[in-house]
Image (tube, one colour):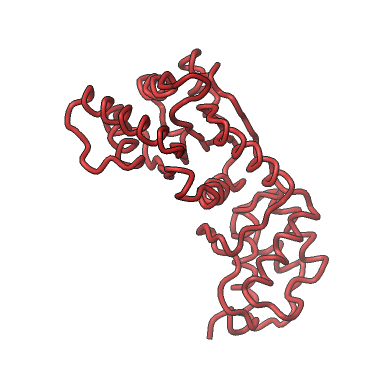
Length: 271
């Protein structure tokens, strides 16, 4: 038996793997998405979203991507997984992401392919959008210069491509490596942690999506999780998942505040 069966759930409600079904749109998410849609639809060129670890940047990036339909946009999500990438690698990835089937070998040829593809998209009324998650990993000045070069590709009244960068607050310092690029940021948003009440609503939402039909976390337990997680979605998920697991292992129908405190202590999470 699993804890899902023990607590009569269809599935695990607190996985940290992005899943659109569990998306819980709070006011700040609606605000950020509206600003990003504005940046894309008006082809502003560069938008930036920053937030601390676990505040939901990746989830928001995927949500934004889902809103960009194929009829009106040529869109893609590029995730940077390490800081050792080269400018040529970035160019090749962007080229393939915007629909270039056979990317050239030489840098000059790649840039020519990209420009031709962007003009083709513009002429058909489609907008090119590249979302870059973990953009704080773009830690070389040369990479910032390449992004600035893309923003110089334009037609009267519009850029030919829009980038949306998602990253940690350290992304601000990276953008500052190239002052002209930093000055081209047209839209900038910051994600903050959730309030106590929103945290509790978030937990209940995820439980409902997972099939909960009875109370699993009483109000005092929700309050404790909100306090210990500091409203950071990733921590909320981790704490809740471990509380459910520990409750199941101890065969507890009722979960209490002391169990939450014990789990938080074991996880090394400090309020």
